[in-house]
Image 1 (cartoon, rainbow, N blue to C red):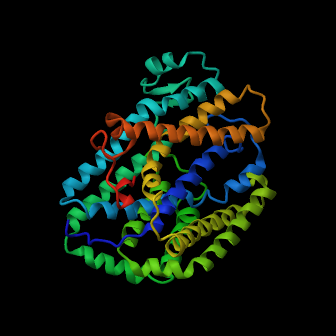
Image 2 (tube, rainbow, N blue to C red):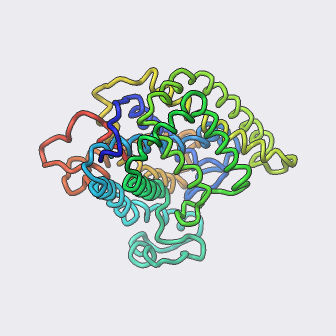
Image 3 (cartoon, rainbow, N blue to C red):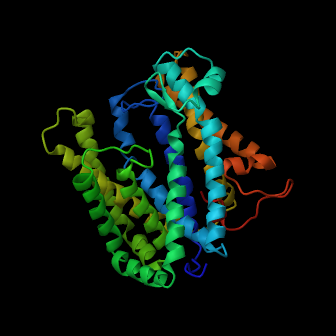
Length: 397
C-alpha cells in the first residue's frame, strides 16, 4: 500500500489507549449513579455529574484519535487496499455481530425488567423479543447495539479511509504535507477547537448524539475528523512534537474550561433554570476542554510514557475484549444489586471489582480458546502458541 508511508513506533499512544478505555469503563460505572439516565440505575445523584464532566467531553474523541493512529499503523502492514479492508472487517464486524447477538441482549432485558416491568424470563426475551425489530413495550428498540456503536462507527470510518487511500494515490504525500503545515505547531490545538465550537454552537446547537449511524450527524462531525486527525498525526512528527512541548499549556486550558462547565453544572444541574445564554457558554467550555485535554494527554503520553514494558502488549490486546463485555457486566451486576440494600459506596465498590474481574475472566478465557478469539476481537493463532510479540498496535481495535 504505497500511498501510506511507514510510521515510527510510539509506545506512549498504546499506553494512552489503555488508559482511555479504563476511564471509559469507570465512566460507565458512574452512569449507574448519575441523573442523566442509564439502562439500570441504583441512584440519581446530581453531584456525580461533576466528576463525570471531567472526562465526558474528550474520552470518546480521544479514542477515535488513537484509533486513527492505529488505523494507519495497521494499513502500512497490508499489501493492498483489499487486504486492509478484509482484515479490518473481520476484526471489527465479527466481534460486533457476536456482541449484538450475545452481549447486548442481557442489557436490554435488564433495562426492561428494572424500568418497564417486563415479566418474561431472559430466555423468553432472547428467543421471542430480541430479534422482533420493534420497540418492546413501545419504549426499547430491539435489536440494538448499545455501547457497541463505537465498533460500528469505527468500521464505517475505516472503510471511508480505505476508499480515500484507494483513490488518493499520488495525493497522499501532498495531503500529509498540508496536514503538517496547517496543524503543526499550535494549529493542531487551535483549528480543531474552532471546528468543535462551530459544531456545538453553530451547526448542531442543543443536539445530542443518537448513535444510530445514519441519523447521527453530530457524532460524525466530531468523531470522523478526530479519526482523520489521528491518521494524519501518525505520519507527522511535527504535530506530535508540538503536543509534547505544549501539553502543560493545553492541560491548564482544559482544567480552566472544565472549571467553567463544572461550575455551571453545580449551580444549575442540567442547566435547568439557568439564565439565557449560559447554554452557549457551557457548550463552548466543553468544546475547548475536550480538545485541549486530548492535546495534553497525547503530549503527556509522548513525553513520559513512550517506552515499552512487558505489560504493554497484553494490556493493549485486552482492551477490546474488555470494551466488548464491560457494559453488560456493569448492567447485570447493578440489576442484581438493586435489592441488596447495600450503601451506595459499597454498591460502587462491588461494581468496580466485579466488572474488572469479569472483564479479565472474559479475556483470559477467550484468548485461550481458538474459536472464541475472533469473536472477542483477537487475532487467531494456533492452540498452544502465544500471540506474536512485538508491536502492540497489532491488537488495536
